[in-house]
Image (tube, rainbow, N blue to C red):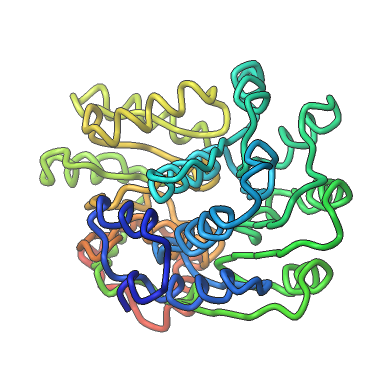
Length: 372
């Protein structure tokens, strides 16, 4: 379905055209009409399916038709689990709202609140926030959520994993009872369903590309390798790929930093992104990676949320995740927007149980390239 068939305003269609898009993704085709009509929505969709556009486009559409005399009042609140994702969502509103007067901003911890407060004081209609920083600014009296018309909970499953549910419940007390609520999640565990039923009213449920599925555009490869030989194999593969942009996943922050040092020693430009890095550092590293100033980004799972690079060719699981669904999230960073991608995984003998769980979720056996 083309975007122009969704009866969107000329300003949004113009912005979408500038972005070079014409076809709406499945989640966008299904969610946008329901949201524009005012329904609450539960959307289950994995990363890379156009989920952010599925709620940012209709929110802009609705706000463009609301009372223009209240332009500087926060009417839409989007809650996200990480700083990177909050920034990505803010960029989405910037792109889709390029030709609209609707102001928006993202607030998150890890940086000084000074610049964030300056933007808030000038007034915004859409606020994207991580729960901790939002609660902090509410308690300081800098944020008023009493006029909220639309609430979005993005990556709900990860907010649950990160322990944000209690913070969200506290935030809900500052919102009006009557509002449109949208919840998006890659998985729908029992806890999320129970929570959704407490805040959504007769929601329309949409399920697209469940977390057990991987994009057809991603070629998956598996290397059985001893733990001590992993760094050597990684260097060999990166050299074969001529250091072409690669996102490498490790389980720990320490492991990410250690791996960066090994790559730098052999002349491969690499940097790490994880929770111990300052927000400024994380944004600089991510910007350098997107611009190809560094060819390899080493990331932990939490820090990688929000990394959105349409033409990222390689994802490498240096260490397999212990949660099978996380594997799908990781490799979903490549093969996006119709582009082809390659997902390479290393597995040592201690990770074979994790591999079994991943392949059970996928429903197929990942092809083995090397079997040591």
